[in-house]
Amino acid sequence: MSIFIQTKNLVAKEKYYTIKILENLKLIEKDKLYADLKYPSLYKYIIKELGYTDAEATIRVNAVRLMLKSKVAEKKITTGEISLSNACTANKAMHGLKDKAIIKDIIKHATNTSTRKFKDYIQTHIKKERKEIIVLDEHTLNQFDKVKEKYGRDLTSFEIIKLMLEKELRAPEAMQRVRKIKNPSSRVIPRSVKTKVYTGECAHCKVKHNLEYDHKTKRSHGGTNHSSNIQILCRSCNQRKEIRARQLGIFI
Ligand SMILES: [Zn+2]
Image (cartoon, rainbow, N blue to C red; front, side):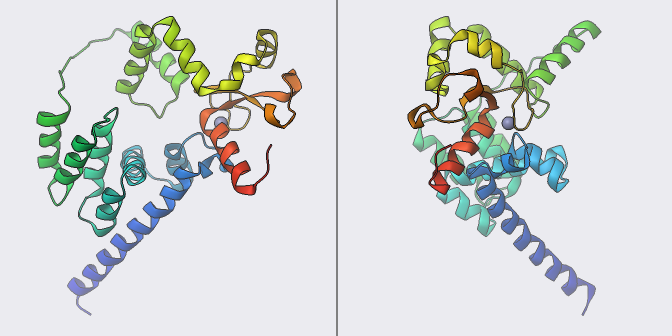
């Protein structure tokens, strides 16, 4: 076999495996299966368990999220009409977008086009950005690193700044609302119990952000608000717990 035919065959296999891996990652993300291995996110699982680099993980996580958002995009990713890097750009651009027509347009423009052309399209039509260069001194940099540690190292500097700004600009009533939506039962846990059980980390995967109070046994299944029934879980582990219980048909 000539080296050219051999290379062509290898590439065909590579493409096949890339798609198969993405399909598995989609299932792992959908049911939060990574929490079973004590990872707080798909991103962490991909890096630590599969050995991909940061950049490779970012692309895969975004591609998987796009697949979960849109059946059309999923099909196009599996046929190769949308490249992995375009899928990543598309998913990032869709963040916070509700307008279905715009989302459809993004997917259309991501199809059969180069990475650069698609990025240009996003920058001129979807995400209007302003470039701002900030010089930080050593002290501020150290503080920034501490905040970064608090939110989780898998977030980019941009995402950290966004979180800080959202926190700063959120009205007190809005914060209350968010808390209630995130964990409706938390409002009935007495403050004294909350203080007692608070550890600052997820009881399962030890991550230190997106923490929620969880009833080990649900309130609707006889669980009490006693400190022995309350634990701290991160959002992913909490969701995974719910999904597992639903799938097994049991209630924990
Ligand atoms: Zn966790």
